[in-house]
Structures are given as C-alpha cells and as structure tokens.
Image (cartoon, rainbow, N blue to C red; front, side, top):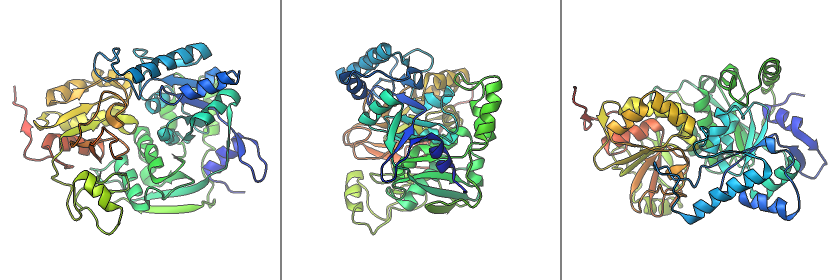
Length: 465
C-alpha cells in the first residue's frame, strides 16, 4: 500500500490502535522551556509519578529571558520565577538544561536542531505552537498542551487521532530577492489562517529541494499559521549533511544505519493525500503583512485589498486603509530574530545589506540571535560589528520582541517591521503594530525608514576611510 511520509512515521510510532479511539502514539523526544513546562511538572508530582526517561527531554530558557547585556538580572518577577522554577524542576528530575552561558542557551526551536537532537523519522513535541519548525528534518513535530506534556513525562506517549495530510507543491524558481519566509507567507495568504486545519503539510517541489536547512526551518515554522498541526519536508542529503557530527547525532556505525533508515522516509510515488495545493513562485514578490493575522499579507508592490468584512477591525488597528500600498509606509522599529528567522544565515543576509550603511535616524533596530551558538558565530564572522556600526543593537539570545513576554517590547502606537511569525494585536507589546517580512526586507526597511525590499537612495553611505 502506497503511503505518504506522514503515514509512514505515524505507523512506526503507533503503540496501540483501536477503531473509534485516538491512537497511543510514542513520542521520541520533547523540548521544554520556562513558560509551559511548570504545570506539567506539577501534575506528575501531584500524582506521585516520575519521568519515564529524562534523557528524552531537553530544556532551555528563551521566552522570558531579557536580551540586554546584563540579562542575569531579571526585573520582571514573573519571568524570574518561571526561570528559577525550570532550573529547579530540571535538577530535581535529571533533565539537561541549556542555561545561560552554557554555550547552548537559546530559542528552543533553534537549539534543538543545532545540537542534532532533531532527526528524520522522529516524533518530537514541545509546549510551543512553532514546534513545526523541526519538520524541516522529516520529523513529525508539533506543539502540545500542558496536560499532554505530563503524559509524555510519565508515559513517553500521547493520545492522538491520526491527522490528515496536505501536500503543498511549490513550482518555479524562487526569485533572487525572495526567501523561504516569503514562500510561507504567500501560502498563508492564499489558503488562509484556517486553510490547513487538521492537516500535517508536506512541502514538495524543486523549490523546496534547493533550500538550505535553515530556510526549510523557516518554512515549516509558520505551518501553524495556516492552521496546520505540523509541516515537514522529506529528508535528503542536505538534511544529512546538516545533522552529521552534531552532539546528539549518531556516531560511527550508527550513522550509516541511521542514514539508511532516513533515506526510506519519503512519500511513495502516486500515494494519496487528503488535499493538494500547488503554488507557482516564479513571479513571487517579497511579502509583507498589513493586518492583524498572517493571512493579511500582500506582495511588496501590491495594495491592501478590499472586500472582506473582518478587514475593517484590522485596518482600524493598524491605522491603514484599503487600496493603500505598504511600500513607502514609515516604520519606527525593525526586528530580526525569533525561531522563524534568528539563525546564522538570516544574520548573514542582514549583515550583507547593512554593511556600509546607516539605519534611518528615527528607527530603532534590534538584531537578536536565536542561540548562544548563533551569537558566537556572528561574532566570529564580524557580523556584530557590521550591525552596531550601522546603528542597530546586537543583543543576547532569546525570543525577544517576537511576543512581548520579556523586556523587549514595541511601544504603543509604534510600527515595527519584523522577521517574526505573528502580527496579532498587541503581540509585540500593547498597542504595537507589526508588519511581518523576511530578514532582508526588514533590513532594507530599517535603512530607508519605510517599508521597502530594495536599496533606496535615501541611505547614508559610510565615509571611506
């Protein structure tokens, strides 16, 4: 029987199947952070249960931690309590914690892949909706709630109905000024925030195959924004090359055994999908969101559309009107970072654009690496110097102003162009206005002081020495 990749991984992890009931699904690994894990620890302790296998868990600090230089001093008492509680729980239960200055602290969805934890064919969960990031490796990865995390702690398994599978096939070549972020934003704009509800998306096509692992992670990261449970890409040589020699990767003879298995993880020719979407990206423009959810997105040279009732509330909040262009719209803040676009490739793109230029005087720009490893690599390559010379702030690792759960917030009424994943009302701070875009578009816009995806003659060139 021909199967797609999701069916193959699912079947390999079903512990028990009974018609009319959810499957008992084995979970290979779980990632933890300080915000959503405390209640799960408390639940198993109240029941007198222990964690089945502490080695199948890894924790890090990301959501609540400040990204300023003196980040060890946490002013917010709730954040401080969350972090201390995670430290205590990990120590009590024997779980490895990537704490500050461990060389591996960072955003959970950046740290997992860079350590080689995320591997093809695994089931991986986390109490975070953007766990879909790990699907870039051919991993069935999705976010879970607190009570479900407690099940993983105690049993190493969860109850879950087998999801439907959607194939999203990208045709054409990605234009030079576009990135994976533009691809996923375009998909969400086309099918809507509920277009993939109840499905796991498999991304296919030549345009997918040529993406780097980091761009694949960006693509899968935002699968949740169109309602999908998860998104994944079949593993290939690009995947294997990325994983090899990382700390958690198989070693020696186990590497060959692992890659032989990983090569079997692909959808069979002529297998069935519950739904198929095809998108031609050959004429794709850089994408920018205009409203208060990721579906409300247009190409950089388009204007805000008309015709939907729910647009009015969004337009009122963002202080825009229908038929208005986004190109040329002034911005106050620019942010590069998050689990969507806080990796070293993202920072290299931004550095190339900022090098030799100054950001607009009225713009505040934060560039936040996704992990301590990304930060150190950026420093080794001199990217941090390019950022600071251009007038941006290069900060310490964390989720930062992706979600306004720490010190980093966009002030009320200010407009931010951001490489993050959500533009919900108040997401980056109460009363803030967010425009999602790729790191490249964020960088160009920071230089110009308004939304743009190319160099403008308003830039101030650095004097030749």
